[in-house]
Length: 137
Image 1: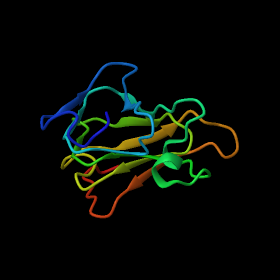
Image 2 (image 1 turned 180 degrees about the vertical axis):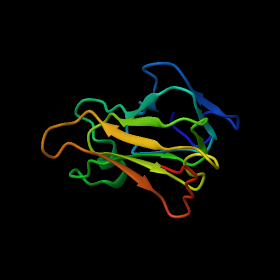
Image 3 (image 1 turned 120 degrees about the vertical axis):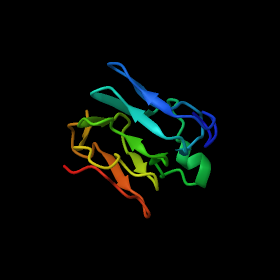
Image 4 (image 1 turned 90 degrees about the horizontal axis):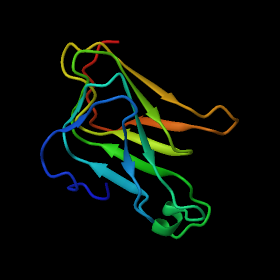
């Protein structure tokens, strides 16, 4: 996905074991998806694929030391009544939850995870200003 309107205006449904969403656009440091998201799988990954040797944020901001890539879900993330796990899959990635928020009224919760175990390995899960979450756990 490489633009806020890449998926049109309908709901993005994330289902099935091993599902991954993200972007593979070279030089793309910031990707925002405005669509409502419906999650029906127990867990899914968000990853921003980088071309070896290409630092997309450095390309965008003209700073060779910049390394963070942002991915924003700006629509409501509907957990469909279950606790879901969101897995960050790219080193130094920042996954934002925008104004749509996580969950709809009465949902039970969300877990955030990453596969990185080495020192300095991280994925940041960020709740942006204006984010309203509706899950209870």
